[in-house]
Amino acid sequence: MKYRIMTVIGALIFSFAFSNAPEIDNTTEVDVKPALVEEVELTDKERTVALYESFSMKNNTMPQLSVFEKAIKGYQKLDEAGKISNSLLTIVDFDLSSTKKRMWILNMDTEEVEYNTYVAHGKNTGAEFANKFSNTVNSLQSSLGFYVTGETYFGKNGLSLFIDGMEKNFNSNARKRYVVIHGADYAEPEFIDRLGRLGRSYGCPAVPNTIAKDLIHKIKGKSVVFIHRSNQNYLQSSSFLNS
Image 1 (tube, rainbow, N blue to C red):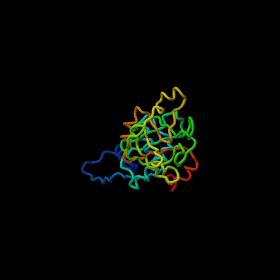
Image 2: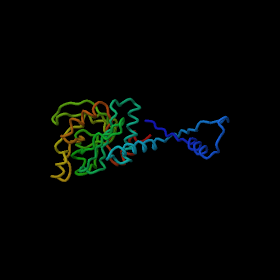
Image 3: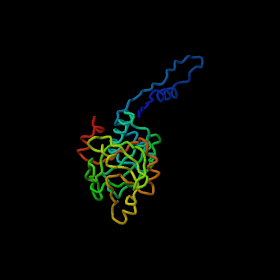
Image 4: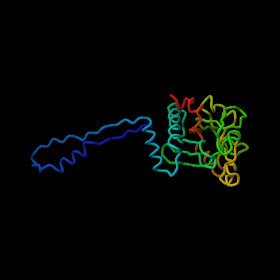
């Protein structure tokens, strides 16, 4: 994703000068020089902010800019490595309460938010908030970091989607642990009304049953999923977030 801002300077000056100039004899030759155009190369941060602002103008909801910036870093690295076939970017912000819609699915081609919905975290990760994370089999905890979606299958939770962790120390055991995206009744907003928070999974980012099928079919096939939390160990150690 490359963005350039074109700054046109000479056109306005030229227009102003001639609007105030004395009448010129039609037989007089006038040397008219083309307007000057200056190209300004944006920094990576400026390009990301510009993209965020463009998304925000088209949509009523977006993740926090700081989370979006991290997601874009990983998305670009995976794109450059040829890991992406589906341009959707899923962002899960576990800084937020499970009573909030903390999953966004962004269409990087149209700059539209395809979904903004609820998502559950692991049973041993926390109650209302996600606090503890693991890459260990049978930990029943969520895992942070960047994933690439794989293929679907039908299991005990119905249609489910494999997600392959891209970060060795944080989520590389996702497939072995069967950390997948699937639908769940405990991820429905009605569950919040009864218990005051969403239910919890065995580590999977479970979504409401009512939208699970369409959501899974939309993001399957090598799109990016970023599960975020302001966890210092992850933020300081992730190879996707640090050069």
